[in-house]
Length: 120
Image (cartoon, rainbow, N blue to C red):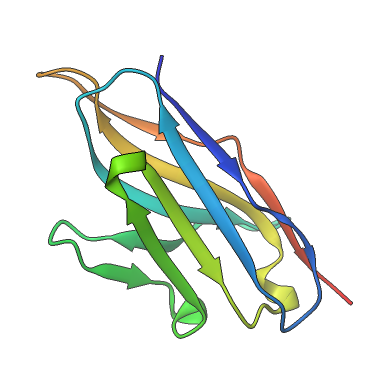
């Protein structure tokens, strides 16, 4: 059974940093896409950062210059380095992946979510 397991959330002061990790576990062929989303209280879930099909990165405007998405293919893990955090970054952060579980089937998976709270 394929799972995405997240870690790294927590409470941080404004201006601080956090690094989120998301590891895919289980049996599968490959991962075709990985991304980070977030959902703040009372708001819709929004895309924060992702890898494009060409391997480049894309960020929501509010994260540009502060967040960096990276991945370790050998570990089936995606990271989100978040610097200069602001109270508006407070949300539950979700990892997302498109995973090819066998030669013919690709599914979307979500992590369980990790809380990030930016507050003094």
